[in-house]
Structure formats: C-alpha cells, structure tokens
Length: 148
Figure 1 (tube, rainbow, N blue to C red):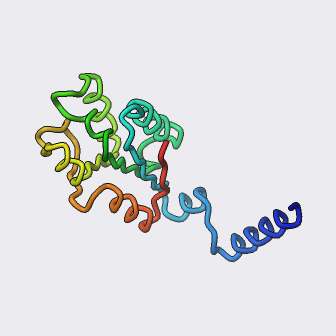
Figure 2 (figure 1 turned 180 degrees about the vertical axis):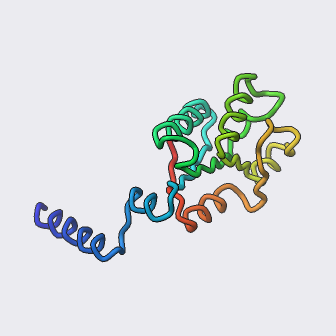
C-alpha cells in the first residue's frame, strides 16, 4: 500500500512540475483572482453558506482578490422567496452582491416552485439552463467548485 501511495505522490509531483496539475495558489497568481463557485441546494445550509462566502472574501483579503458565484437550486431557493424569507437575508445578499458575488437562481427550480425573479429577494439572476449546468460551465471556466 505504501509503495502505491509513493508512486501516486511522485506521479502528481511530476505532473505538477510539468504544469499539468495546478493549484489554487498557482491559479490565483496566474489569473489575479481566485475563482470559486458555491453550490447551495440544502435549505438548512443557507445561512452557513452565506457565512462561508463572507469569510472567504475576508480570508482572501477582500473582494478584489476573489470572484465568487453562488448557484442556488432545489429546496434552498425557498429561503430566498420574498414571502418566505427572513428579513435578515436581504442585507446579507446586498452586502455580498456589493462585493461582486453573482447570485444565480436555477430556472428549473424556479419553474418547479412557481416563482419568477420579482418573487425572489433582490440580486438574483435567472439561469434558464439550470443550476447544475451553470456549475459545470463555471468549472470549465476555471472556477473551483465548493459545496459546503
């Protein structure tokens, strides 16, 4: 078992030296900003994920150091319905949006929940191609995928 681990560690090291495997810090240096896609589908994790995003921006040294897109679909989108949300969420969304966070709402989920953009808290962009497609596209564009 130890020899297999050693082999894989050497292989990854070689690939890294050749530039075939990158790291987040290398991507940040090359592109200037760390790019992260947060995936939020669980209703019970809404406040946790919003807090993670705030901490991420702070930990990176400010919004000019990181590009974040939040993709919300499934049950989590219910937390952002104007008629069902807690009044404390809108100021958090305003703050995150002001720091450059893009708020994506899954069009498929919106159809299933029978809501339109005016029914959601301010700041969301409707993504008709669907949340999972948005996440895959962001990953193809070099975004790191996080699902807290």
